[in-house]
Length: 293
Image (cartoon, rainbow, N blue to C red; front, side):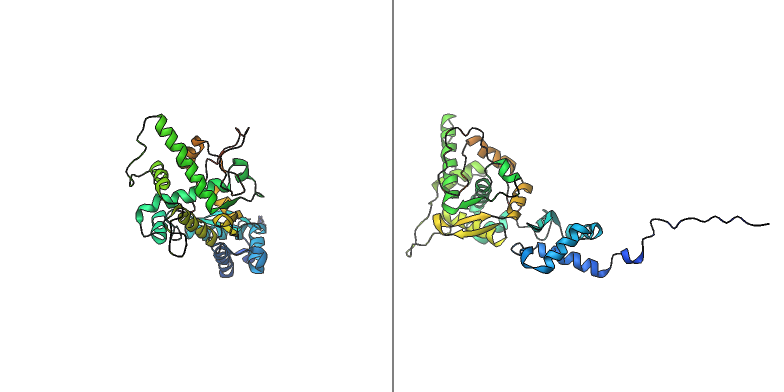
């Protein structure tokens, strides 16, 4: 009597040992995230960075491992590509999150300027990507100037004052009143440049606040300085475009939309819309590179 022996194929789930995640793989994934936290670093100028980006795109298990490392650090992966590198942004509870209150305290002795600093960042985003198609186009490069952003906000202030006057509202609220509209009115009362004995721009002036914002964005890899005209000229990077797409400042940008102030894209302070441009809009989802809390 013979016994019937059944043969079966090895289980598909049993992966070969070579496919197992190794400490070296984890180290490479963490290294890629570390590169992503250096926003000024360009993949084209660092061979190791470029190699890890290629591995991320071509090796799905490695990509999942890198995503997991980023998630564990409280980071959100916006894009992984040759143009942007590993672009990450901090989740609200991440140790890497920059909060508006902390930013304002670092840049100004007056904590009451918090709303003005936030408004400066909002205006930079709106001027950098004035139309939805600009924000959606990966090849689009926005340009802003310090004086142009200040002029843009002052034009918005003027529109707000006109609207309030038409509706019979109080056009001179207390200076510490919270809210974006109050911040715009405070902005209008603040000196544009201020004055010092050696003619330097005062940090608390509105152009000083804008200069702080664009300096922060430049140091964070979101803008690149291209010249000194109009208080300083800047161009956007791929990372900033991704950041503005991701971080929504909905209510504030909606209010800008309602004002009908359309900024031009070359960064000059000429802000009134030209004729026959009813189809132009500000980006409704532009936002800040930090959390408001």
